[in-house]
Image 1 (cartoon, helix red, strand yellow):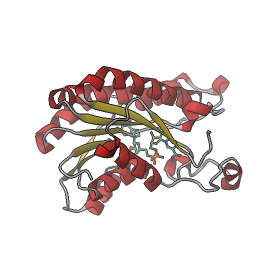
Image 2 (cartoon, protein in one colour):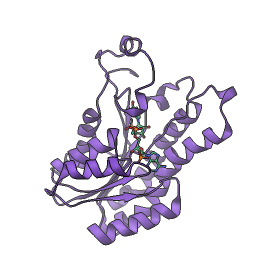
Image 3 (spheres, protein in one colour):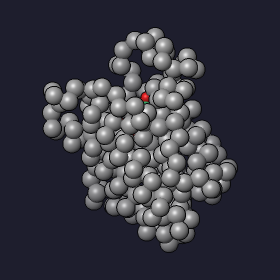
Image 4 (cartoon, protein in one colour):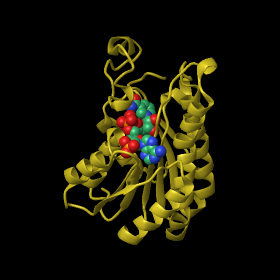
Length: 243
Ligand code: NAP
């Protein structure tokens, strides 16, 4: 389904990003795995993919625009043009608004929102030149619902939805689709300390938490030719939580 395509996936050293990288590779895509601090995790994902497709790892802090530019240039040099960009890297630093440090607000906005801007800007000319491309931004149901304790995170992920729609309009004429995925509770490191699973299950109609592969399947659809007439869309994948 993705044979001959090259995908760049940020935050692919673990969790949802790792599952997306593995899924895309299983569908024939070459993958560039971007990590920040977890080199060992990135190497494990690389090894799990094996040599069926071309796969490399790259260290890059997506909040740093120069690192994004340099990394994208290196990926193009190593792997040829980029066809698919998945902006998945993200962090949480939860606290109630009155007690949240400014530094924690800025860190979350800079990674989750500005990171998407940095990566799309770094890849933009490549997409325009090719007159084709797919951009998939990972938002969250937190953007739609506004979760207490997440003023930084919800705001960053709501920003990702607005950014997705702007990019869909600006790049649409160049045959580039840009969509957002809004996951609910997915079992990864990010959610392992959130508290009682039973409490969450009460509000999820499907009565289970999601797993990274659920999100990877949706990302694969949005990256493929099957979704060629979808752009500017936000798709929840949350077991019905935020409907
Ligand atoms: P995770 O397990 O905590 O993994 C986060 C990933 O982001 C790691 O690969 C990490 O890389 C990378 N990352 C963090 N800061 C970075 C930076 N500055 N530059 C580059 N990479 C960076 O999280 P996850 O649960 O898989 O979440 C993936 C995405 O889904 C995030 O955007 C998250 O907000 C979103 N999401 C998750 C859930 C959920 O329930 N899990 C729900 C809704 C949305 P290193 O480890 O290499 O530093």
